[in-house]
Image (cartoon, rainbow, N blue to C red; front, side, top):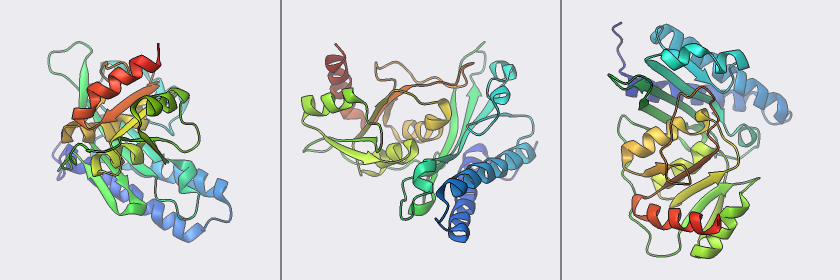
Length: 262
């Protein structure tokens, strides 16, 4: 099928378009009923992305956070050549709070490696940060900031920072920086607001696929907290822990994580 946009540009454009729609929804609905705003945002962004992908990439499968359980565990994904992994609204809590900009839209493409029976890799991705007016993508990956000379800044969850990350910060004399969505945290590494993001305790593939695609394209380190690779399009989409950092910091962070986990 011939299309105007290649996969990198399509990921960027769809994330940006969904983000613009979410900004319009926020402006139109206001914040008097945050729960309704969040629910509507999740649903409308999901429908926008699903409609666009079904029209522009009809032969591909989609794994979305807002899909039904049956759709999430669709067995066809395990033999598919291409699977889009999307989070229509990453940071739903922050989206419903007036003034917060740390929420995102994720669009990523996983593609099977030629000749591989089961393996594949992220092939394209984009993270829109609509309230910040920014979309980071694999079209033109951001240039990584230099490794800091002072204290390392580690992005953590606003509401549930893992206890071991507090211990890691004490060990390394690092500063913990609360940020909302996973996409916003990883993007903060790529733009120099923080130097690393460490999380454990529960996430799914759609929480990290798009920002990890951009991070890897930019040359950042991205792995599980034990240093093993992040793998996507698995039968079970749970992907509970992650480390994204500037590349020079990864050995120190991985060693520190091992120390605090003993």
